[in-house]
Length: 209
Image (cartoon, rainbow, N blue to C red):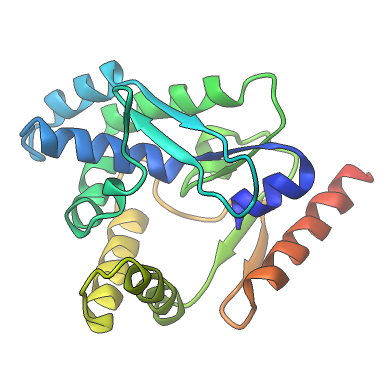
């Protein structure tokens, strides 16, 4: 949704969740123990994570880590199950938060992630807290993975998403929560286009003020 919204506005899209996934992938590739917070923090400071904007809304934004295209591999089950653990490390969050602020500096961006409105860009002009039921999000993920011929039971995806939600809302550093001045947008019963249109209307209303 964020990518489509950015395209409608002519803004740059920055998927911060992909940055944590890319770092998690790198840690797994380099056999960095997920229990070693110091090593993970150092890795986050040294990692080079970048984006290549899509030429059209239909195309996927490309994610690079250490100059390697990791767009697809960071969505693997292995990364999905480990990313919350990596993202909970204070040093990791500090390093990637600074990287995210640098990416946004001086530009019009649509940035999505789990602590954007509360930590990364607390002065953002428009904050939308996009949510949906665990079951609906799992179904969407299952359909997406099915299109890629990945075999995973829907029930397992429900459990994975619920587990990540719990970990993200209960972590000590930058826990997942809506910013006090954010606007709640529940997409459970909405189509993709309806979500984009509602989000666009919210942004336009802020721009008109």
